[in-house]
Image: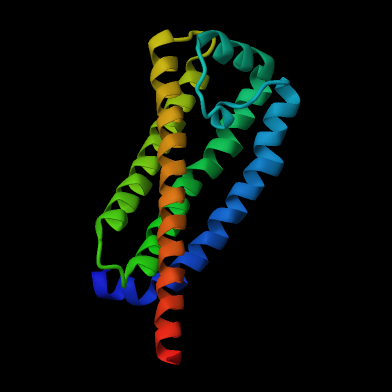
Length: 185
């Protein structure tokens, strides 16, 4: 997709992908992650923005049991394979949509980079969770720390990307308000 086409359709893409991302997130929060937490009594890996260690990982995996671990792989990881890409598409198209009239392109470039980084860290996290669950009851301490670090970095990059999108959106709204007030004079 060319830059011009993306810029022209960024609003449509932002809304469409945003609806899909929000639907996936709602489904994960209210169904799959809620089920994982209900059967284990533990917070799932995906919902630990400050990470976890080997003891927390082992406690969750043991509490899940074989059926819970299979559920995690079959349902949560499947949904969380779609969600990061949809979130990134939403964030990137939104920042491009709001930022197309900005003279300073740096916040847009940083927002796009953070959105991509968030997605990559989320996929590293998902792949790591998959390996951790499949290798259970063997538990690689170093792998747990790598996956936990990916979780932390995903959380940080996502938060920063969303904040940047909001800041660019506020800047866009202020710019539109200033243009309208000049037109009225």
